[in-house]
Amino acid sequence: MKICVGLSGGVDSSVAALLLKRQGYDVFAMFMQNWHDTEGTLHGDCQWEEDRFVAEMVARKIGIPFYFVDLSGPYRQRVVDYMFAEYERGRTPNPDVLCNSEIKFDAFLEAARRLGADAVATGHYCRRETDPVSGEQKLLEGIDPGKDQSYFLCRLSQEQLAAALFPIGGMLKSEVRALAAEADLPSAERKDSQGICFVGKVDLPVFLQQKLKSVEGEVIEVFDAWYADSPAYRRKMELAQCGEELSEAQLLELSTPLDYGNIVFETETYRSRSAHQRKTRIKPNPWGCIAGKHDGAQFYTLGQRKGLAIGGHKRPVFVIATDIAANRIYVGEGEDHKGLFEKCARIAPEDIHWMRPSLAMKTGERLRVRVRIRYRQPLQAAVLLRRENGLYILFDEPQRSVTPGQFAVWYADDGQEAPELLGSGVIA
Image 1 (spheres, rainbow, N blue to C red):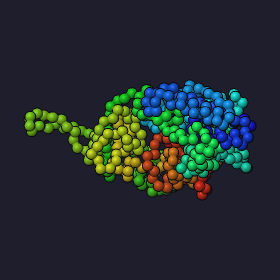
Image 2: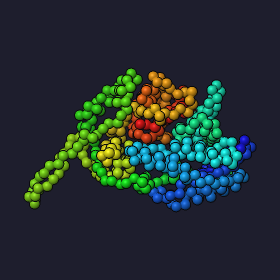
Image 3: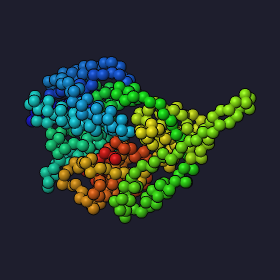
Image 4: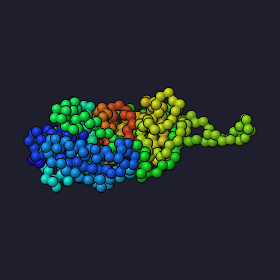
C-alpha cells in the first residue's frame, strides 16, 4: 500500500510519517502550498518557506521521497472566496473545516493519487474505523481530550474517509512530542500552528479588507430593560421551557436570533448655559445607548470581546448581535448577558451532513446526542429534531454565542469518552 503523508513541517504530521514508515508502508511526503499573499498576516513574509524547509528535512531524516504541490488556486476558490462571502453576509465561517473537505482530502488527494498513492495520511488527532455490519467508515474522536480534531473533519464524505489515515489518533500529544524527540526529528520542538488553515495567524479586519469595505457604524449597548420590555424575548423564554413538544413553527421561532432594531435614538435641542447657544443631543433611552463606533459590522462576530474599544465598564463587553443592513453591532456587558445565550439552533436542509448516510434522520425523528458548536468546546447534551424545514438542535442548557455560519457537530451519546462523530451542519 502506497501512502502519501501531508507533511506540513509540524510535529504531528512528521510523527505520522515516521510511524507509517516504521510499519513498513511505502510512504512518500508531499508539502502543499495554499496561500501566497501576506496582507493581514502576522507571521511574516516567508512562513510557508520555513515550513517547507523543515518538512523537507523531516522527509530526509525519515528516508522518504518528498514532493511539492501548489494548490493556491483551488484554495482561494473553494475556501477563501467562501470565507469572504460569508463575512459579507454577516456570518462567521470556519475555513478550516472547508480546507479539509475541499483541499486536503480532495485536491490534495487527487494530486497524491497522480503520484500513485492509495491513501493520504495526516497528523489529525482523530480515529477511523470500519463498521463491521454496514461497511461504512466511522470517524471517532482522538483519545487525547485536549487535542481532538475530529470537529475539523466533520464534512468528509465516505469516499474521503476511506482514503484517509490518521496514524496519531490513538496517541497523546505528549507521546507524539516524545517520539519526535527520540527520533531526533527537525520538527520535534516546533510550536503548533495557529490561525486560518494555510494562511496563518491574521489580523482579521485587515485580512478581510482585501475585499470588504470599511464603513463606520454605531455600536449599540443593550441594557437589561430591553429584555424586560420585549415581548419577543419573553416569548423565547416561554418556548425554551416547552422541551421537545414544539411545533415546526415554534422551533423556528425559538432558533431565530432576537432583533434589536427597535432600539432607536431621538435627538433633542437644548440651550448651552455658558454660551446661550442651542445645541443638539441624543435623548436618553432606557433600552440602550450608543457606546461607540466601528469600521464595519461584517468584521465582528458573536461573542467577540477584543477590538471593541469600549471603556467605562466593570465587566467585559461582548458582541451579542450584528445587523449588516443597518451596519450596526450590538453589545452587552458581562459573561452572563441575556443576549449571549440561545436554547436552540437550526440547520437548513441543504446544510445537513451525515458522516454515515445510513444514520441520516427522517422527518419527525429525534436523536439524543452530544454537540459542540466550536472547536474545543466541551460536548453539550442536546436532542436533534428533524423537521421539514431543517434539523433543530435543542440544547439541554442554553448555549453561549450560537453563531450563524459556524459548524455545529454532533456525536453519539453512547457514554464513550471518545465517541463517534455522526454529522454536522452550518448554523442558520
